[in-house]
Image 1 (tube, rainbow, N blue to C red):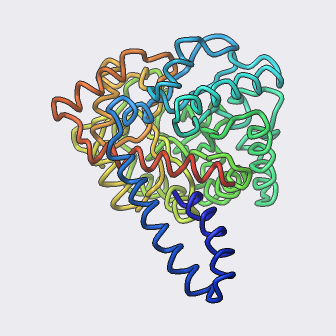
Image 2 (cartoon, rainbow, N blue to C red):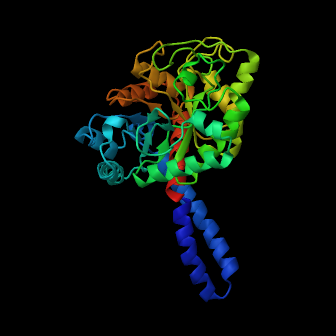
Image 3 (cartoon, one colour):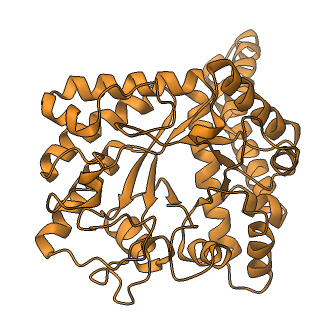
Length: 373
């Protein structure tokens, strides 16, 4: 609880000044307080109920332009930690601000961390706020050949989203298309066929978003640039060449080194990384081995939509993704049975509580960082 410790530290500093040895006394007392606060914070997390511990990992969607009473109740009870908005949830600026405020009020009412409220605001045809920035699509940004243009589009996007209560952008796309038939290029969502160009423009775009207090989420790890069809609609095993795999990972290496907040896990399988062909979002070798260990990513991971084909129903996929180490489980619908399924898996030992605590802490740390930006 660093913010609490800092506040008390100021009080201690003023009191110590009156006692005549401000630096020695203040530093000693502040250090003791920091240890006490950290210990209390750790104890509070360790004592979390399963529903609150696992609820922070669930991101859901909902119909209409106002949150349902059921969703607000789940948010208050700590059973949902994040919400995704789609175009059908957005009617006007005033309406969406009211919507996001009501969601955050529900989280506060239950004593929970603030919600992550996410949208896909990539640019081009994928913009949930159709009139908002970015005003250039990824290919258009790359054609401008200007890092400053990319950064400005990111800053504009982050500021626009934050002013409407949205604190997470599921963008940018950093897939590197392997040829013009790749679906990610056909949809106008990729910056370039060059990994160097993707890195050059996606990085300032993402960092621009983050300067505005909104989390950027690069996707779709480890890169679906070789997919001919949308992996949201078809279960696919991708077999890019070694050179293509190196190119696909290079934007992630750069963005991880710059401190990108979140990475979205694709639902495609990659036998070169996990011989079983398990979809990335459900694969421990992909998440813990490749992303965490080899690439060193310490931020938040989020699955692509678990309604996508994975070879499992969405609730089973959620348990498998959590077991593999995915932090946030994304459902475009209500996913009302997911928490019960996760709790059951935790009771049965199919989910590890220590790993669940690590995911909770990553998510809570991101929320705290966003609140402070």
